[in-house]
Length: 186
Image 1 (cartoon, rainbow, N blue to C red):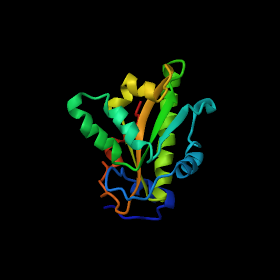
Image 2 (cartoon, rainbow, N blue to C red):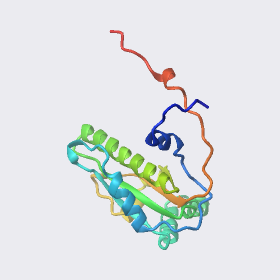
Image 3 (cartoon, rainbow, N blue to C red):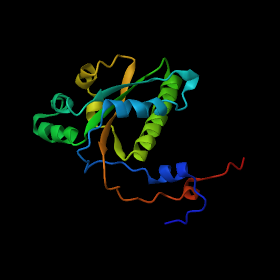
């Protein structure tokens, strides 16, 4: 592990943040907590202030019904597994983005939405609220899009699985940036 030299609090949070996929506590994830985090997360860079995102919160009370409906989009032999999988987190936040009018806007909107998700994740980490961004096959399924009222000009970017945690996942080293860095030499 590298030596820490005058690392800022923000840099430390960025390095400590992990995907929390399991072992959530029973502490409920409330709509109020999610809204509070989103109020700051939406300050992500966004081209022409399009703010191309919208959210569907699946509360702990509605999660079982939602999980059953999403799991039903899978082949019968996988439905129980998918239902259990979607019931693991305490709550879900579905992130939906506007596709935009052309490829450039699509890329800009996706970049902005991904940045917003990272902001949300870092803010949640500070509160020991675990997050993992999931892009399972159901986010591309028309039946799930219909369930969430996704329009033709929108895309489900992912399901954020949410749950408070007591034990941080292990740190996995990153490839040193110098190995992925080059200089343009002309």
